Image (tube, rainbow, N blue to C red; front, side):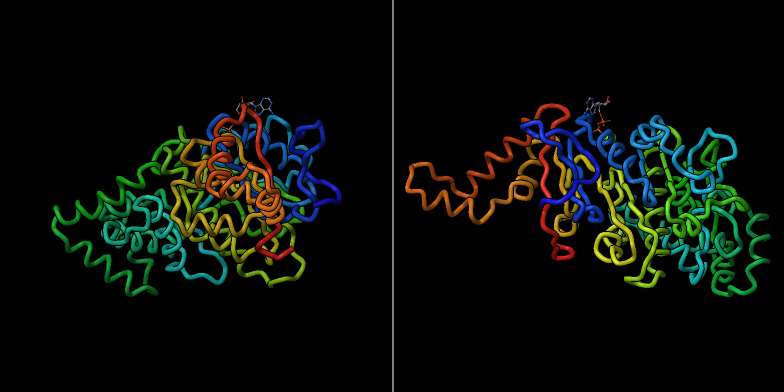
Length: 399
Ligand SMILES: Nc1ncnc2c1ncn2[C@@H]1O[C@H](COP(=O)(O)OP(=O)(O)O)[C@@H](O)[C@H]1O
Ligand SMILES: [Mg+2]
């Protein structure tokens, strides 16, 4: 725990400088705290100090990206190393969410997209999701195979003429053509129920700025190029006013799946550009790609900073995956419920500490649960902009 510090975080109890020890620089990190406690500001501060590596910020509420932009972070990068998925700025390229990655088939792409949607809309409940899944999977498959974008979903499902144009271009996909024939043969009511579940849920891509950002076929942001650079920034501020909250989470989830898929193609444990991925509000899109990034992609050069109001919404297994794979944990004030969950993690009593209490012969004697109750109380009482901080001797790499 000694050695030099990186990424200044703040000032400790006795005026000492607090930062991430060099040894933990490439570890996954977790930043917790209720809203308005200072998470985004701290994460933006840390990120602004990471100029010797690539940084990707996925931010469905856009404040972290706004802090970074207000600090002119992009000025430190070459223009061709700046990737902004930022509406309202001229000449910003869009992102084709159905872009077929190298080594992938159009079916893989459609499946990747649909899985993200199912996770976010239905919490992974496949039974409830089946109708949505069937229609969406086939529709996005057809679109991906012909190079169209997710924005065209509505036209595909509602326009016979549009469907027939695409049908003709799908000669190499007999399964898909059969599905379209079957879809064409449904009566109006059957068709309507199939269409509704898909269009209702993906409507946020259809109009206005989202359609401009996600409807471009020729000028899609090149994530592969981003990943190949030593020092680049990729900002995805996906504000809810643009995309509706759920839409922001879908795009965030798809971005994670794109990065995860591309990283998996790298050769393991050789030199790759280092990448830090900042994932804000990830508890709203805990897609399988995020788990893979945490558990499997360190050897491919990627580390993740997870930012969240709490781990309570997550499944127990997701929670323990996170806590078992992060090094530094920074905990601002959290709710009482949340404190119960995280107190044992951020106040792991050191074995020596416990022994000293037990052997002291004094009356002062705390059981583990009393200590944790006190710790939980402490996290709920933290003043604004204050945080607890611990570096867990990782766990993921044993160092
Ligand atoms: N260390 C700090 N000192 C002063 N003000 C801060 C500090 N950290 C955050 N703030 C302010 O507190 C507010 C909430 O911060 P923010 O980082 O957006 O919180 P969160 O991401 O936890 O919701 C913002 O107005 C921000 O400028
Ligand atoms: Mg925030």
